[in-house]
Image (cartoon, rainbow, N blue to C red; front, side):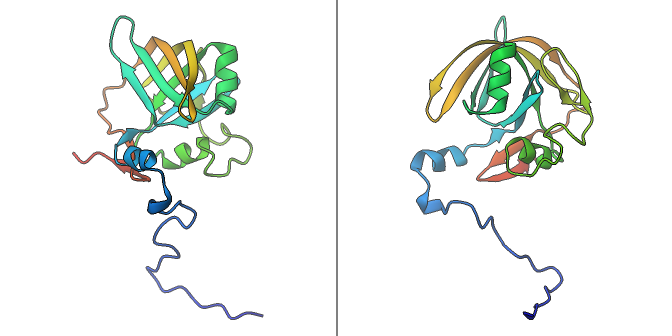
Length: 179
């Protein structure tokens, strides 16, 4: 038997992510990107399939457009390419575990969509409590950096007026806006 040292109350096992790439070992581009706050969104497609995406942009216009960088080898991309459509849901503070699950950073016993309430849409499942989401028609894609640049037209928008702050990703951590 090995002696087990008790953990003192309030002590942390790790003060940071022990698996994270040390800052000096990251590429300069990755370090620059980490210094820009990014929205945390959930992209879902019929199938169902989904992926957490923070490299995305909404372009105003008539029609409105969505651009995003996704993993070409993801189940989300396979499903979206076949369906030709997908949903984009901005996540909120409190959705960190959902974001981690769809990013592949957290186990998903029973599958990505198990255990949470989901609403079916023509574009893919969205979290049942999500008051804001966009239904998008896939227009095109091309390799871009390490990812796939996906271009889509917004066909449907649902907005809630709750004024809830978005979930952001900044310097490797989730953040919320201070009001």
